[in-house]
Image (cartoon, rainbow, N blue to C red; front, side, top):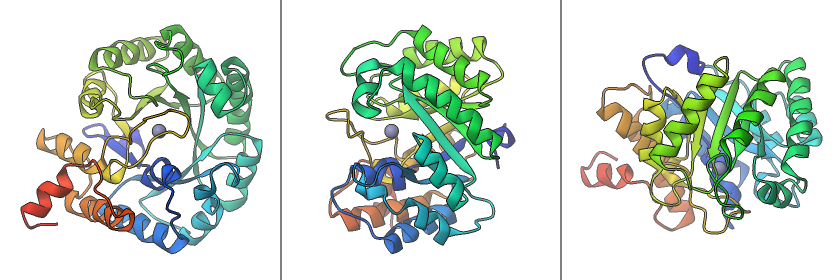
Length: 305
Ligand SMILES: [Zn+2]
């Protein structure tokens, strides 16, 4: 199922196994990751990002991504995705047979230097080249721009920089580009303005949103994106996550809260809320702390989760 086939509803990609677990000091075993994956799959998530092909010494939590993808194997109805940030990552993605990859760079120079160890323009140039190669190799590619709505080091990010990034990725052949509010600095208004501008300037690209809830505006931003025409969003069960290079960063919008918001407004997600809450509850149990998602608690008190 692609974002295109969900015209009447929204397409949610869960990233708890990647964006969520990469921040955790507790190391999840392959079996534990599989258990969470199967809960999310049973909940009906159309796409699940299960890991990242990054250096195991830098992000040890993601070291078993290749093995995890091999163990998952065929998963009809659920697209398996992983994050690719460089040549070596693309090589690993192709070797383990993942079908969908997110390939992203930061539009903020300082964040890019910290995260990718090179200036933003340079990172974008090598990423577009890598995107072309991934597409030529038959991968389904979603481009991504981190810090699209602001950077904790640099403050506001110019719309032009984001636009240039989307255009460059479109020229490389990407038809899907995710705008990430890595730092949680977006507001419903900035979402509407930037998404509107990008959709107008590069109409051939489907924009999706990756929204961190650092300042509590996650759901409001998500709905603003929906009203601006976005139909695909990244989410994390339980609201797990953050960014190792952004101090104080919180997780993505909790999957269960996004499902509730859309479904309560009559916008289908194709996702079973109670099942997502089971995944969030399992994550809480393993991490031995409450996670930010609200609906899990609501359902627990209502006796249905
Ligand atoms: Zn993120």
